[in-house]
Amino acid sequence: MRGLVFVLLALVWVMPVGAAELPGPEPLDDAACIGCHQETTVTWRAGPHGKADGAGCVSCHSELHDAVGSQARQEQSCVECHGGEHGAAAHSYRTSKHGVIATLEGAEWDWSQPLNDANYRAPTCAYCHMHDGTHGQMMSEDVLETSCMDCHSPRYVETLFASGRRTLAIGDLKLAEAEAAFGDNPEPKFIQMFETMQSKTMRNLRLGIGHQSPDYQWWYGHAALDGDLLRIKAAVSLDARKRALGEK
Ligand code: HEC
Ligand code: HEC
Ligand code: HEC
Ligand code: HEC
Ligand code: HEC
Image 1 (cartoon, helix red, strand yellow):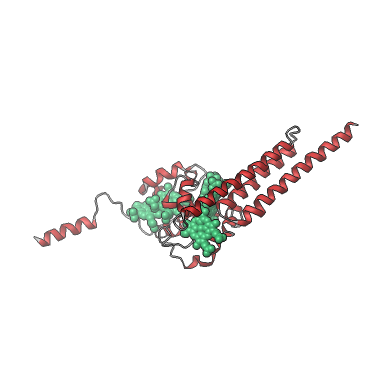
Image 2: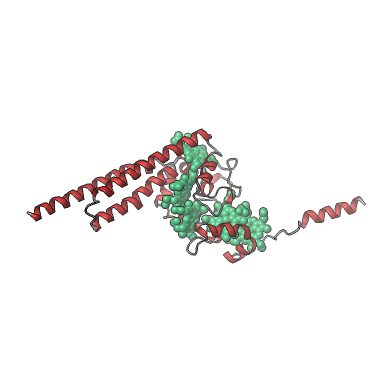
């Protein structure tokens, strides 16, 4: 009798109802991943990577099932698409304390472990953007704020986020001042200068705050916005003086 119960228990343990099998060692493609991981696929489709020109499972995870976790958690799985090693997304991260720690110590971390503070001393890209394996919302403030609190106190994080919002608001003021400078004279060259200020310099500032990089908050952020603003004002005033002379 006892033997029978043991055999039944063993069977239940070995073959849980409805469990999918692990794939073999051969390389896999996106269609295979999607076939077995339908729940993850639903959230992936809802996010930026699930769009037609986004990122498939294999581009983050690897084609080999043994490496799917360890590859996706490392910085390399993201930077190739996000501006390359020297692009602003990767560079702002590397020049943060988190990036410096990961660069110095990452080779010794066990990347097969889930992303939490017991396994990693400092966060990599996926730790913040894909906390708890979220495949949909990559930029949610709630997710980012809670992922910071794995390692920092709530008060520290709230103070940082509040100061980040103020820093961004000052950036918006500089943009508004630049726009007002050529408001009466919307020449294509001024609009182009303004658009670069908006898409490149202001993005540096956002990355500086999000990635906690002093270089990007200051040199590539606020100091560069000041430079852009001065150049736009100078160009507008030069243009006005030329026209005044021409009109005489
Ligand atoms: C034949 C079905 C099957 C295929 C195909 C498959 N998986 Fe899995 N996968 C599984 C099973 C079963 C598990 C273990 C389930 C668990 O632990 O909850 C798993 C676990 C995982 C995990 C968690 C591993 C970890 O280290 O945390 C990831 C990530 C994953 N799969 C991604 C993928 C990706 C990406 C592909 C395509 C390259 C893929 N899988 C293809 C069945 C499959
Ligand atoms: C942008 C990169 C990226 C893409 C694209 C991506 N994943 Fe993931 N995925 C990750 C990361 C990083 C983790 C690990 C999160 C952790 O350790 O907490 C993960 C975790 C998982 C897990 C285990 C946790 C869970 O959510 O169940 C599965 C399964 C998985 N991915 C499957 C897929 C499949 C299937 C696709 C394609 C439909 C896909 N992933 C696309 C980066 C990605
Ligand atoms: C195969 C290319 C590819 C890979 C690999 C990839 N991404 Fe993306 N990612 C994209 C594209 C395309 C978009 C949507 C367009 C955009 O917003 O830049 C996107 C969007 C995002 C966004 C939202 C940006 C925004 O402005 O809303 C974040 C954050 C992001 N990815 C982080 C990551 C992280 C973290 C990883 C690694 C775990 C990763 N990506 C891997 C191509 C990729
Ligand atoms: C996995 C743990 C971990 C997570 C998650 C994490 N950090 Fe950190 N953070 C650290 C460590 C470790 C340091 C370095 C502390 C030291 O030795 O100065 C650090 C340093 C910092 C610093 C620099 C402090 C200084 O003295 O220069 C800031 C700012 C910061 N983190 C903000 C954040 C924010 C904001 C988030 C979420 C978006 C976050 N951290 C997520 C571990 C983490
Ligand atoms: C400490 C947490 C953390 C880490 C680590 C991290 N990010 Fe971010 N990332 C953020 C936050 C916060 C933002 C700003 C969100 C916002 O502006 O709403 C951001 C913004 C972004 C953006 C959007 C920039 C834009 O166009 O506005 C991209 C893309 C991105 N990160 C990619 C990456 C990549 C690639 C890595 C690794 C090299 C990485 N992140 C590492 C927290 C992090």
